[in-house]
Length: 522
Image 1 (cartoon, rainbow, N blue to C red):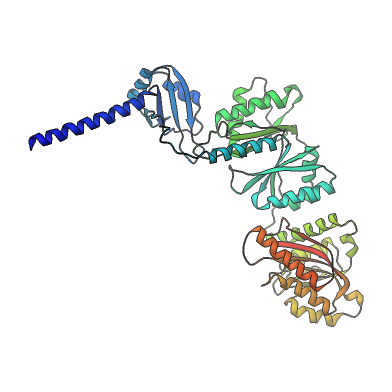
Image 2: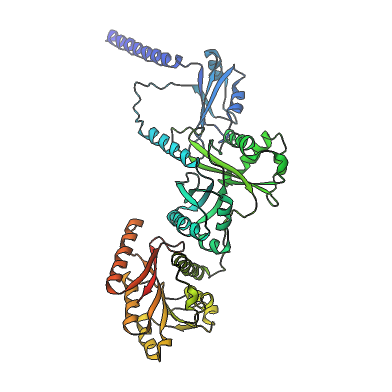
C-alpha cells in the first residue's frame, strides 16, 4: 500500500514538472517583456512609464493599452535582456503609477480563434471617414435626433436662400459624447456658410439641433486627444501645416471637441511652443479661431488609439460666434416658445419652396388656431403675420400676454363646438377664415384633416385656405414607420379634397413622431 502511494506521488510530481517546464518554455520566448497592470493614470505617457523601469536595465519599448474611462489601462515593457526583465519582476513594487508587475505571457496563436470581421469592419469605417474628411471644411456638431433634419435644412433651404453651394459629405455618430453626431460639409466658402447659419433668423430655427460649428481644413491626422501623445500630434500638425507665420496672428481662441480635452491641448501647446503661440491664446478678444475636432474614435478591446482615432483641425478668422445658442425662454414659456418656432419655421420653409407664396398676402385676414393653448401659434399669427383676428380655440388657458392681445379671440371650447358658433357669426365673405392652423393633440392623426374639411363643409372657410397642420403619430415607433403613417394620411386627404402645393416637413421643433403638412385647400 505504501509503495502504491509513493508511485502515485512520484507520478504527480512528474506531471507538475512537465507543466512547469512547459510554462517556462512559453515564458522564455518573451522573457525580456514584462506586464505592468493597473496603471493609475489614464493619460500616462510611454516616456514616463519607461523612465520608471529604466533602473532595471535598458528599456527598448513601452506599449500602453486601454484607458479612456471604460477600461483601466495596462502596459507591456520590453527590455534589451531577459535579466533586466527578471530584475524588474522580482524588485518592482506597486507604486503611484501601477499596481502590478509580472512576466508577460505571450499569446499561443495556435489556440486563438478570433474572427477578423470586426477588425476589417473597423478598418473600412476608418478609411471611409478619412475619405470624408479629405473633402470636408465645415463640421457641425448636432443632436443625433435631428441629424436628418439638419441635412435637409442645409441642402434644401440654406443652399437656396443664401445662394451657397454645399454638399453633405457624410455623418458620424460621436463615440465621445452621448446623443451627439457630426455632420461633414464641403463648401466653396465655409466662413460664408457658418456666417449664414449664425444669422438670427436661422439660429432661432436650428438652435435645437446644432450645438457648434467648426471650420476645418480638409484632411485628418490619426490621433487620440484623450492622451498626451495624441494632443502633441495634433498641435504639431497645426503648427507645421495650418497656422503659418505667428507674426500675422494677433490673438487666438481654441474651440475643442470634446471640450474635456481642452486642458490637454493647451498643455501640448505650452510644451511644444517655440514661437510664442501659447502667449497669444486669448478667448475673449481673439482675432483667429483654432478648431480641433475628434471626429472618430473607435472604442473596443482591440482598438489602438494611436491609429483608431481621427482629428480634424483648422484656423479661421474670429468674425462670428461658432456657438449656436438661442435665448432660453423664461419659466413657463418653453411650450409657447417651441410651438411659436414650429409654425415660424413651417411658414419660412414654405415661402422658400414656393416663389409665388408670401405670408404677407394674408395680412389683416381672419385665422383660426385649433388646440391653441398655451398660445404659441396664436402669437405668431397675431403678432408676426398681423392677422386681423385669430380665433384661438382651446378649453385651456392662454398665456396672459396673448390673452390680452386684441387680435386674439380666445374661444374656450373644442373645435367641433367652435365651428357652429363661428358659422353663426359670418355675415359676408370677408368674415370667412383664410388661414387654418392646428397643433392640437388628437386621438387619431386623421382627425386633423377631419376638422379642416368639416370647417370647409360648414362654410366658415374662404374659397382658398392656407393651412398648417401637425400630424402626430401615436402608434408604433421609428422614422420609417412615422413617415409611412403620414404618407397615408396625406394620401387620404388628397382623395377627399382638392389640395394644392402640399409640403411635408419634419421640422426642428417637431417631436420625433410629428410631421407638419402645409398647403392650400380649394
